[in-house]
Amino acid sequence: MYRLFKVVVSLGVIIGGLFTLVLVYLNLTFDPNDLRPTLQKITVDSGFQVKIDGEIDVMVFPYPGLAMNLIEWKFSEGNYISAERLSLTANWGVLFSFLKSSIRTQSNQWITDPASVDVIDSVHLVNAKVHTQSKPWSKLSLSDIQLKVDNISGQGRTFPVELEITILEKLKLNITTSLGVDIPSQILKIPNFEIESQLGKIEGQTLIDGASGSITGNLETRNINLLGLTEILNYHFPQFSIPKMRGERSLRSIGATAEFDFIASKTAHLDGSLSIDGQPLVFNLVSDALNQNLQILLSAKSFNLSNYLPKVEETKQQITEVQYSILLSPLAPLIMWPGATQIEIDLEQLRMDEFEISNVYANFSSFESIIQLNTLNADLFGGYADLTGLVNLQENIPRSEFKINLATINLASMLPAITGNSDTNGSLSMDLDLAFNGIGLENVLNSTVGSGEIFVMQPRYSELNLEQTLCSAVTLLEGSRSSKIWPTGTLLQDLSAEFEVRSGSLMVKELTSGTENIDLNLHGAVDIRSKDYQFLLKARLNDRSNAQDSCFNKLSMNSQDIPFTCKGNISAMSPPMCFPNMDVLGGVIKNKVLSDLFRKLSDL
Image 1 (cartoon, rainbow, N blue to C red):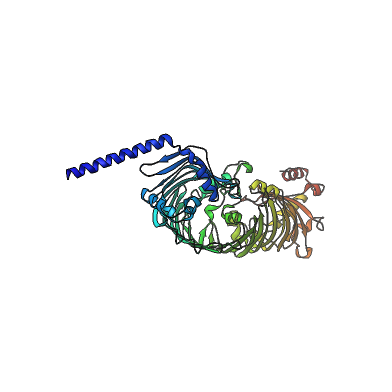
Image 2: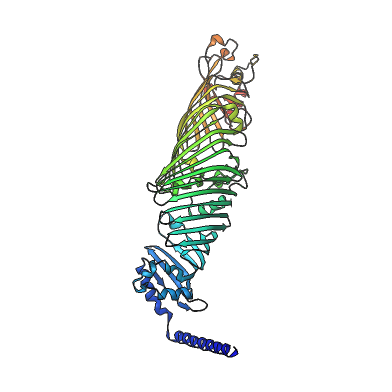
C-alpha cells in the first residue's frame, strides 16, 4: 500500500514538473499578443469590430482564460463600447469536451452553437463606457461599468450576475440578479433582480421567450426619489424641470407594483398601482409597437395636489430670481416616444388646501414633439372649467397656446380659496385665448398675448356701496353732503367685459354694468406681477325719474359721464380708492383746497 502511494505521488510530482516546464517554455516562447489578429478577425466575422490597444494576457490557473486591456467594440459609426479590461475564463473539462467535439472552429460555427456558451465560465468587465450618437440617446451616457458573471451556462441553469453602472454621470446603479439562459429553447429567465441606487430600489422577475418574442414579469419599486431623478435629468435635458414645491417631501417617496406583458413588434401591456408620497393611483399602459402608438391611463378616487404646487417665495426678490418652470416631467412619455402618444387622467376628487375639484378628466396626445391638450375639464366652485391647447417643443424655445372656458363659477366660493377675499358674489363665466413662449415664468409673462370675454351674473360687492362712494365724491364738488341712508354693499347689474393680455398686463377694454340708478363703464389695466390696478370709471344717471334722491340729480352735469380714477391691489383687503378725474372736472369744483386735495390723491 505504501509502495503504491509512493508511486502515485512520484507520478504526480513528475507530471506537475513536466507541466510547469511546459508553461515556462510557453511563457518564454509564446507571446499572447500574437492572438490579436486572430481575435479581431473572429469578431469581424461575427458582425462587429474589436480593437485591442493594450496587452493580452493568458491565464492558466485556476482556470484557463484571456484578459484583454484597453479594448473597444464598435457596432456602427459613432456607437461603441470601451473598457479598461475584459477577462474571460473557461472550465477545463468543458473546454476539452468542446475541443474534442465535431464543431468546426475554423468556420466560426462554434460562435452560434449553444455548447460554445458553456465553454466560457466567467466574464469580468472593468471600467467600461458606452458611447452613442443615436438621438435622443446620445446624451444618455453610461460609464463606470463593472460587470461580473460567473458559472455561465447556456442550458437553463441559473448563474449570478453583478453589475455596477453610472447613468448621466450622477446616477449610480447596483444591479444583482441571476440568469437562466436556455439557448436551445430560446428562453431567458430572470427569477429575481434587484436594482439599488441613491434614489430608491426596484425588484422583480421576468421571463423572455425568444421564439415568440414575448416578455412577461412583474416589478416593485420602493421609496423612489422622483424629485432627485428630475434634478439629474435636468442637468442633461433642461426641459425636464419642476419648480420648488410647497411640500418639503413632495415626490421623494414613489412606489409602484406592476405586471407587464410585451410581444415584440406587436403590443405591450403594463398594469399596476402607483403610490405618490402615500397617495394611491391605478395605471394602465398599452403600446402598439407596429404603429408606434402609446396609450397611458391614470386614475384615482382622491388625490391631494396642494403640496405639489410651486412654492411662493416670501421675500421681495425680483421675479427673475425665483425659479419657476412648466411641469414637463410627467409628460416625459409624450416627449420621448417616437410615435403617437395619448395620456388620459381620471380623478374623482382633486383636493387643495382651501377647496376641492371633482370629476377631473384630462386627455393629452403628442406626435413629433407637439403635445396637444385635447381637453382638461372639471367641476369646481359650483361650475365647470374646460382647457384645451398645445405645447410645441420642435423649436429651441417652446411655444404654447391655450383656450380656457369657465362656466357659472360661484365667486363667493372661488375668491376666498384663490385670493383669500370674500367680498364679491356672483356667477362667473369666461372665455380666454392665450399664447406664450418659453417655460420660465418671466419669459411667459413677457411673451404672453391673449384676449377674452368675461360675464358675471348678479354680481354683488359687499365692502362698499359704489353708488354712495361716487355720490359722495360728486356732492363734494358742490361743497354739499348727501343725507341719504345707503344700504351696505353694491348690487350690480349683470357685468360683461372684453380684455386683452399683453406684456405682463391684463387690459380691460370695455366693462359695462350698473347700479339701480347709475350706468357704469370701465377700462384700465392690472399689472400681473404686482397685482396693482388702475381703472377709469365713467358713471351716468340712467333714469332721473327713478332717482329723485340721487345726488347725481343735483349736479348740472347729470346728463354727462362723470369720470373717476380707481386704484388698488387685487390682493389687498381694502376696497379700491376712487377719485374724480380732475382733467375733466377741474373747473366744476368750487373749493380750491378740495380741488388740490383730489388732484394729489388721484396722482398717488
